[in-house]
Structure formats: C-alpha cells, structure tokens
Image 1: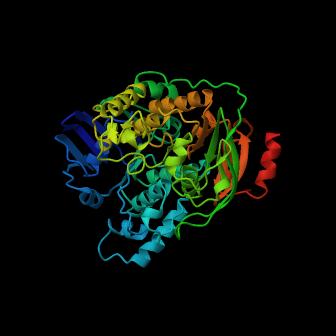
Image 2: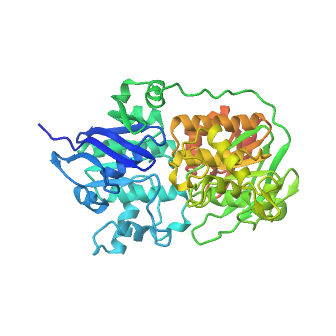
Length: 511
C-alpha cells in the first residue's frame, strides 16, 4: 500500500499570546490536491511554515513518504522535495528576479542559464516575468509570480500554494488549474490555500477546515456548496451585500489626459488616462498586475506628483502637483496594495499607525500627539471591523494579513473621505472578512462617497462595482456598466486583446 506523501499528527505551536496550532493532524496523498481552509488567524500559515521548516513545532510528528522527519529549515524542506509560495513574500528588494530565485538553488547555478529557465517556465504557465528586473520595481502581483515560478522550477513532490490566483485573469486561472491537475496526475501533491470557495470546489480533492488553530472538519469540497464550506469555516452564513439602484451624483474625481513617462526603467508608462468618478458610485479598475495600476495609484494619491496640474481634479480643483497630504486635506482617502511598509509601519503599534492618515486637531495639538485620542480611534476600528489583535498597542506586524487589512481599511473609512481610492481591498483576506470589507465599501458609496477600487479579483469587482474599466499596458479602456459585460470579456481586455477602439465602443455600451 502506497505511503501518504505527508502525515501530520498532533502538531502544536504556541506563542506567548496565542495557540496557533492545537493538536493538528493532516494527511496528504501522492497526487492529491488538498485545500486548507480557514479564517485569517485560524493557524493555516503557521502550519504551512512548519511543513516548510520555517517554524519548529512544540509538539507533534511529521511523516514524509512514510518516514518520520524533522524539517530543520526551508533548505532541508527543499532537499526533501517541498516547495512553498508564501502569502507574504520572501524576496530581497535590491536583487533581480534571477538572483532571488538563485538563492534557493545550488551555488554553481549559472545565472544566464537560470534566466532562460525562468523565462521558459513563466511562459509555460502564463506568468509573465522579466528575469533582469529588480524586485523593488515589481508590483505585489508580479512578486507573487516570482514566488510561483521559483517553486515550479524545483519540480517538487509537494507544492504549497498560498492564494496563487489573486494576480491572474480568468483565462490564466484555468491554465494554472490545468497545470496543477497535470502536476497532480504525475504524482505531485499540492496543498492549496485559498479564500475563493468556488476555486476550492472546482480544483481540490480534499479540504481540511481549521478554526482557532484546530481542525474542525475534513470533507470532499466537490460535494459541498460555497455556503456549506463557509459555515464550516466561520460557523455562519456569509453576510449578504445589499445592492440598490442609484443615481450617481456630481463628478468628484476627474482624470483627463493623464500621461506619465516611466519613473524607472521597468515602470509602465501611462497613456492618455481619462475617466470620471461620481459621488455615490463604485468604479472598478480591472487589470493583470504590472499593467499600470501601480503608476495610476501613485499619480492619484499624490505619491507621484509629476502629472500636469489640471490632469487630476478633486471636486473641480486641480491637484495634479499636490502631494498626498494636501490631497487628503481636500477629502481624498487612499489604501495602498502593500500592507506592511506602505499601509502600516510594522514595528509601530496600531494606535500609532492611526497617525499615518489622521493628522489634525483630533490627534495632534500644538505639536503634541493626543495619545488618548489615537488609542480610542484604534480601539474603535478594532471593534467595528472585528480585527483580531491584542488591542491598540499591538504591533502592526503581529496581525495576520487579513486582520491588518481590515484595520487599514477601517482607519481610512474613519476619515469619512469624499473620494476613496483603494487597491486590492481583500487580497489574502478570508471570505468572512472580505464580505465585511466589501459591504463597508458599498455602505460608503451609499453615503455619497466616490469609491475607486483597483482589484485583480473579478468576482469582487462584479459584486460591488457600478461600472468597470480595464487597464492594459498603461492604457485605460473607458468604463462600462458592470451588468452589461461578462467576466470572460473583461478577462480578454485584461490580456490586452481588443483594446483598440475601446473608448468609442464603451461609450456606445453605456448609452
């Protein structure tokens, strides 16, 4: 009888303030695609790090192909044939893509040969990469591609994937699924972490559900519904987002003739970007990562003030040359795609992180920080958004990715902005938290805010957007009503197909 590829028994890992894994047992067979499902903070990431040797368990047994092993570190895991793609990436910003991937390979690896292999593998799986680019020039989505390609290059026996489809078009997701099914048919086992319940049902053979560090159930997801999986994971049905017909108000954010040269050799040039965002609407921006979203965000937020002054207008006022602080004073709210480093300072407390976007009489008086006020604000955000944290003084880096995202979104909503620009609002966030964040965005729209959502999650954009536009190769396709276009068509536009003549066609569709 064939041994299981991986068997975990009684795995326990305790930290000073939490039991991350509490007697977890898990079995993965050769050629099995096995999902691990749970809320943010359920213990999934800790368990995967134990399997990969990045964290040592306090108790429990690990069997690899029937033999007990102690995986001392990631290098030992790779020697066994285990590869992992982390949700939070382990890349060096100052090295190139090729140099980062070479770090996990034998020291005699030739970089020119490796670069050719990277290009070949990336093309095979539809994950476009430029091996010579430095990582600090890549978007979050492009960095995820580096991690996926690095894992695939090792030809692993067990591949651990954490949210691998968040940067892909629907067509590319299907291609990746085909690749994963082929790997499984060849005997590779896959541990698949995703918050997309439909993906798990379509792809995975087995699903282990975790809650509060414990296994609460094992099922065949192909026999379950999205609703039943949700109940197993969070113990309740997903909240329903109420939609309503609406009449948009006046234009709050107007972008016209926005063109920007590359800010660095690997940036995407913006070409004649133009759109209007109205009060009381959600306008979605779809696109494959690396097609100009980063550059558009920087131009809108004020991080890149090179635009012509009247190319960007807030409530009719030109702001193209204003910095981010000046635009915030005029009612702009902004949530970046990178949580740690841009959205929050990792070492600072949640209370102190409030100051990143709340700098006014309520928080600072006569040059002195009102610590009571920022503590109260942080506590309010934690309570309203159900953030799992040790309180306002907890360090930002101590939160799981999803909980930190809820805090950052809540911090920005607390400002009651006239215009909110938000990037990847639910990236890596569990289904319950994602539904809550989307509901809050819709509520903000209903209160009259103009909301611009840049997301690579098409289901998300179709759920909350009134209109959707697509960015490809630095060019923006004019918005179309979300109800008038299919996901497949948006996916084609995201790939750059049929982008010519887009504006006139889109205007016709709206008419």
